Amino acid sequence: MTACATAIACNYACAAPFQPNVTVLSDDIVYDVNADGTNTRLETESVRLNTDQGVKQFSQIPLRYSKTMQDVVVEEAYTTTSDGKRIDVAPDRILEQQSRESAIAPMFDDGRVKTVVFPAVETGATITLRTRWTERTPLFPGQFSTTEHFRNQSAFESASVTIHAPAALKLYADAVAMAGGKVASDDPGKQTWRWTLGNTPAHVPELGSVNTADVSPRLTVTTFPSFAAVGAAYQQRAAAKAAVTPAIQAKADELTQGVSDPRAQAALLYDWVSTHIRYVAIYFGFGGVVPHDADAILKAEYGDCKDHVTLLQALLAAKGIRSSPVLVNAGNSYWLPQVATPLAVFNHAITYLPDFKMFADSTASFARFGSLPVNELGKPALITDGENGTAQIVTLPAGDPDSTSVTTAQHVTLASNGDVTGTAQVQSTGSLEWLSREIFAAIQPGVEPQVASRILALSGQNGTGDFHHGDVHDLTQPFVYRTEFQLPDYAQLPGPGAMQVPRGLGGLSSISDSFGAFGAQTRDFAMPFPSRHLVETTVLTLPEGVNVTHLPKPLDVASKLGAYRSSYTASGRDITVTRDLTIVVPGVLLQPDDYVELRKMALQVQRDLHSQITY
Image (cartoon, rainbow, N blue to C red):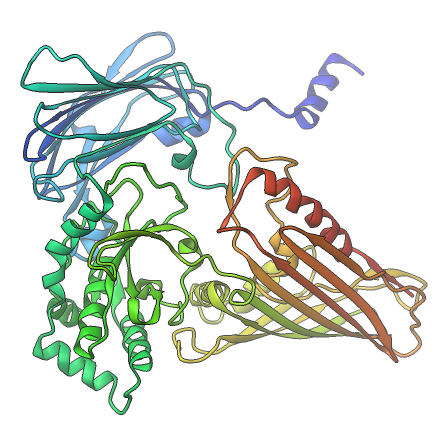
């Protein structure tokens, strides 16, 4: 083979070594904190762009802030080309506009975005940005909190965080993989803290893992002495907003007319808020932490998470039902700092109903009363007003196989020409039902056949299909949907031959989909992987004259993390295939050691799914 041919072959056969998109040459952050919690944050960062993705990622940098609480000034911004030439960002390339949320819901968000557009960005160039952030109004009066993340998907040569504050201001800090702490100060009236991060390589991203912030160097500093104090501060500003006014009382009475059972009343009020109050997704910090009055939310018919919670709290109170706001993370972060801060991980609000020991998220839109969306399962959360009158950290329900399930009943007919036609009925519970409703709500009516064909193609099947379902917004009834599909030339008849049991168009959360992220032999980080119970039954009807010569052997696999059973039986022209998968993960995070264990079972399950019937 020629050298040229060898090089071409290597382009396809040799995996390129991991290269981070950027290398942070330096990132220096300095806070000057005042006694009342107001502060300035000066950050100077230089980043070398290593890849085309890095160029796209950092060619323009958005700086989002709240105009009523903050000021942001770009003090310096420039590109240094690979040959050392400095090119400054022109003033007209620092663009400012309303945030998307502010534009569509100005009552609930005053966000602005300054976008710095860098010139001459290319692989090998370095961008430098120096910004000054002034917090004129703290989120909580008299309090200071901040969290800095140095995400491990980038390489760091140097980073530091310095905090100057009055000597009398009590600070609490939690540093992970960073060196430092309190240092000597030249001013007796001031205290100084400093943390540094030395030369740190990037880590290869792991698809499906927890948020990179959970596994990266990070620092949290706060003046709050405890999470109880955080909850009390939130309640001090939010509780009065949930007052029961005549309009709230009238609405609560209207919605619960003829219903006296408190739990049934709570379900009716929750369903109404979920389906009638438009949710505007604004995270804490930009929409503030103080909700609007329940009356205003009722009149506007939309609100962010804390407004949803406030309106539901007022409606429940009108019927004598207790509830409390709960702060949680709505993304894929599961970390909780060792010190108390409102915004290190908490960016979303839901509701706790102590009388029913139940959590509810009316912003989820499609979660039935008593269930949570999958992204909130098993997370640390702060009940701002616990049953003993103080805030408390809790772990949200993680779900279990009994409450999180999918049952699929499928009937498939194989015609004498080898074509397959089939139908399926699917019913889900818990967070998997929420997921099904969420998916179908996102599909434009009339596009279902295109989606069905795409799903079939992604599962290695060539065919057409369709979905049929009820009202995704009707939270009073279980959500059941039906599918139909056609797979032409699926089997070579009359045989002899072999074929897999047609997967068809079954559930959106199927057994075969469960292990899509289990390709790697090992993982370094945990991955969210909630417990579940999936049962799939397929009845395959064969045409006249086709005789089965061999059925796959049944499989029974047990693991400390679950079990899988399959069976294959024949009766006349019908072959019944039953597959039953139970996964039980402690909490909701699959840890690296448990991943290796569960992967062993996953490989056996996947082999069983590919087993063949011979005829």
